[in-house]
Length: 71
Image (cartoon, rainbow, N blue to C red):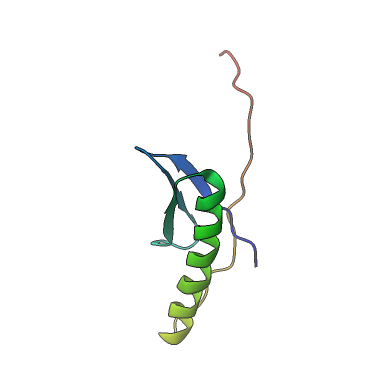
């Protein structure tokens, strides 16, 4: 499964989170490191849900870049 991931610049690093998996977060010194770490975090998060007998949310979020327009 592929999940949408948001990566944001933070103070001194990058943070990443998954809108469809509340609580699934990671950080990295670079965007690439944040991507790697969030991929591991997603796997760990899903394993935890399964171990607890909870459903794994289907990916539903979408990501798009939109040009700003004057009103």
